[in-house]
Image (tube, rainbow, N blue to C red; front, side, top):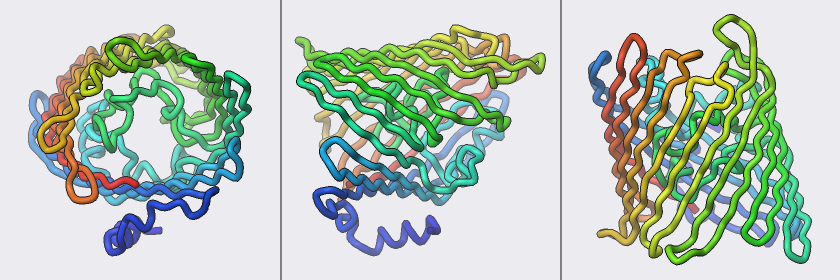
Length: 359
């Protein structure tokens, strides 16, 4: 399916037709996200450039029983936005974390296009617990380092650093499995997924996460701690290979139902590999604003791993304002990114607008 044809098809026909429950066992979810961003570069790289992209995501969920489900997720996109521009200039962090045109072809070097997820889940239900097993082509970010206010680039923050902890190097859209145990306020997850490094070397990624959720005087809160490690597949400066390893924290808390706050932290516990040594981010989301709007504000700080990377540190800020428009939501977004390397300093201010329709 050509992305342009898909986008035209959904434009010409009522989108609500595709947000449907085919029958009690099959549902279809469709979302369309159009983004335009304009970046003004300064410091050791100068100039300005504006580019856009459109992405269509389609999810099929077949649930033959209450304890079994099969998920297929496809994505089609036209354009790469500013990703190539930022990458060529040497930036580590991208202003739009969405999967765009080039990301959806030959995914992870597997000779597979457009198919992001294809998994089966079975859940065992006890008197006071649930135990589920998921296997297939999965996305690690759906299970590890999740966050209520900073985890979705199509409806929340757009920059890489606010969607997931970049230090964790969470892999997506490869073969793996997850075990989840839920009991009252406690959730335990264990994940293993096989993926590839940028140089094409296969490796296995392992992660475990503990989540404690509670309602307190402020509102609802979720507090997560996770650990990750990999097989020895990441190249070091001397040509040897070693593993990635680290721990992370992801917290979100509502305050009086109209304010949400979040924070993340990541620590590299095996610094012979990995571009980052430490990572921190925090921010807030305010609801019930004019035009039924919602505003998000976030800041992030990344400390480079001097043993591996030429990055000294990076500072990132983002603010967005989202409100409903027609059948979807429109977001105005402003980002600032400053990445200081040993030989140069890269800096960009990026203005963006995003329109999202989701069913």
